[in-house]
Structures are given as structure tokens and as C-alpha cells.
Image (tube, rainbow, N blue to C red; front, side):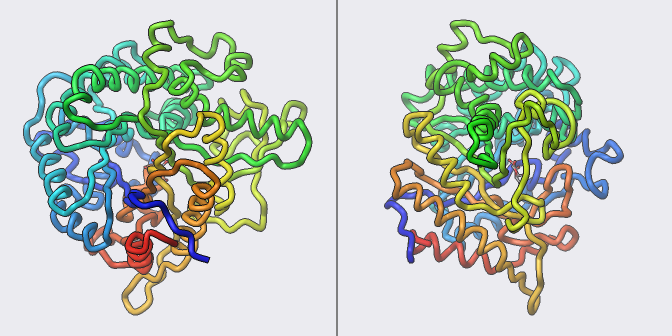
Length: 460
Ligand code: GAL
């Protein structure tokens, strides 16, 4: 059965600066915490770095042509903060501005809408040294100043802004488990980093709304990530555990943005380990997103762990899972991607309905969804049937959610190119085009052609 999508549905693809640009120290760019993190032995698989990545920086015209061939309506990319402000604040690097101007102009000339993320994890290293990065008091204001530089230079053409990508990952993986930059391990720091990320988002939105939005007529929001949590059994305790897991995951960030404060369950369980917002900050946060940005990849079962802690968490020891008292598991029958993430399209539909209900039916953009799979070469072409199955399943589930009344307005495939997958380096293939790290060949894949048909027919 064909699943038709609403007219004007936005079909796109997404990347982030550090994962694709390369040119890490060229044309005046300053170092970011990921540039530094990659140099520390043992942090990234095979010692890989984003120094060259997909060389997107030098291949903008060719890559935009590729996007046009694929029929993309929108391209989501992030700005490397340290390319614009090499020291994180102060002097603007004109060559960095020129690069993004070129990218934006070429996209518009190709009929592709730019969707710009201001922060996709590559904090200027200077800010980590000087003001303690996301733990410092000044960071929200410094972020808002950087955002203002971007609105000033690009806002006449960019109409869709995303302040922060996946604050949960920054907080938990960067400050809890320490597997992402800046590599800190703590049970408490994630809550402080998250707090400052939310305040930074709110301040940047305030700058946009008070100084730019009226004349530039764009939209601004935040993108959060969340998996679905399905109760393992029908017991009340497991149902509550699943709900609690979703609140500690998504509502941690979305409640402040939609309701002005953290979820009650987090306040109760964390006490003074959870920072508090002032009245003024609550007002700045509440209603600070013009749309609900969602990155979604997988699903796990949740069960109550109050008297029975079996699993710590998929991400390792410490922090979050103890605070929630939730055990997580997967069904052995579920297929897995190369990241070992379970492929469960119905979980996506349920999550969308959960968001619809909790946040009063907002306009949702799925700003990332996709799967990593090992490439199989057939006649020199990558034949990625697994990836097509993945997308078919998830896009169909999203269509069903729309039919059931959820306001999903757009969908961005992760990712345009196989790229630098953070701590996994280049070992995981995520793109709908393959990039050979050495030859930098972009090989057309079956899934890219398949996605082009979806876009053309507005149906899957
Ligand atoms: C997201 C992230 C992306 C990409 C993707 C696949 O969490 O925003 O940068 O890495 O996961 O792992």
C-alpha cells in the first residue's frame, strides 16, 4: 500500500560541520574541542579524525549538484563556530563567512532550502580552556553573541534555524560517560551542561526574535534526540518506568522549552543535583521553539529497576540510568544496524504520538533518521538494500503517524554522505552515498535513487 505524504512536505538530508567539512585548520578556522579530542590516543576508533572527513569544504559545488540530482528540497548542515569565530568570540573570520555564503547561495540557486544548525558539538577549543565550555556561567551569552553573528550575515537567506543539536548527547556522552568531547566523566555534570545548553538556546532565540525575526521572517527551534521506550511488560511498574525513561530523555529538554521547567519526576528524583531556572529564565524558555525538531534512531524496552538493577545503560556505567531506575533491553528478534541499534519503525510512530500528546500537537520536523550498514559492492556499485528497507519502514511509520493526526512537516535523512561518525571514526557507514576515505569518490547508491523516487512521488 502506498503511503502518501501531505503537499509541501519537506524532504531533506542532514550533515554536520565536523563530520563532513574537513579543512580543519584552513582559511583562518580555529580548533574545536573535537579537533583536540581526536588527538587523544584511544578516544576515536582507529585514531580517525575529521581533519579531511568528506572534504565537503572544498567540494561544495559538486556536493550541491549531487543534492540537486537527488531531488532534495532541503539540506540541513551546521556551522562550525570556530570557522566564524576562531577564538569562540571576538574577531570574525571573513573567510569562514565567505564559505557559508557560498554554500547558502549555491543551495538556493539549486532550489534547495538551507536548514542551519548553530551548534552540532564542535565548541571552539578556546571556550573550553577559557570559560569551562558548557559548564561555565558565561557560555549562554557567548553562544547568543555567536548566533547573532550568524543571523546578521546569513539570516537574509536562511529561514530555518536550529540552535542546538541533541543537547542530551552533549550532556550525557560529553559530560557523563566521557566518550565524546570534552570527555568528562561525572554523575552530576550532565545536569549542569544541559542546563547551560538550554539557557544558551533560549538566549539565542531571544536575540533572533527581538532583533531579526520580524524582518527576516524565518523560524527558529531546537532539535532533541529521543529513542522510544516500550514497557517490557503490562505491569504498572514497567509502564511507569517507560514513561520515566522518556521524561529523563526527551522531556528533560522539551519540557523547559514547551512548559518552562523540568519534568516533576526529574525534580523529585534529583533534588539539588538538578539546577533550577529563575522566573525570568523560565519565561525566556517557555515557547522558545517555533517547531519541534526530533532526531530519532531506535527503540528499547524499559522495565522498572527500583529493586532489580540488571542493566546500567546502553552507554555504560554511571549517571543517568541509576537516576531513573530503569533497565533497558532489546528484543532478540529485532534486526540491528551496524551501530547495533534495533530497527523498530513502530517505535517511531509511538514516539511521535507521545510528543503530539505531551506538547499539544506541535509542528514536528524529523531532523535526523537513518541507519548504518556495511556496504556491499556489486559491479562497483554499493547495493544497500538494508538501508532501503530501513527507510521504507520508518518513512511508512511516519506517514501513518501523520494519518493519525500528528503534525510531521518534514524529514531529513541522516546522512547525505558517509562521514566521520564521532567516536566510531569512519568504521560505520551511515550515508546514502559512500565516501571512500582516501579516494574521496562519491559512489551513487541504490538508496539515494530510491529516496529520489520517494521525493518525486511524495509517497513511499
Ligand atoms: C546523531 C548525531 C549525528 C550522527 C547520528 C548517527 O546523534 O546528531 O551527528 O552522528 O547521530 O550516529
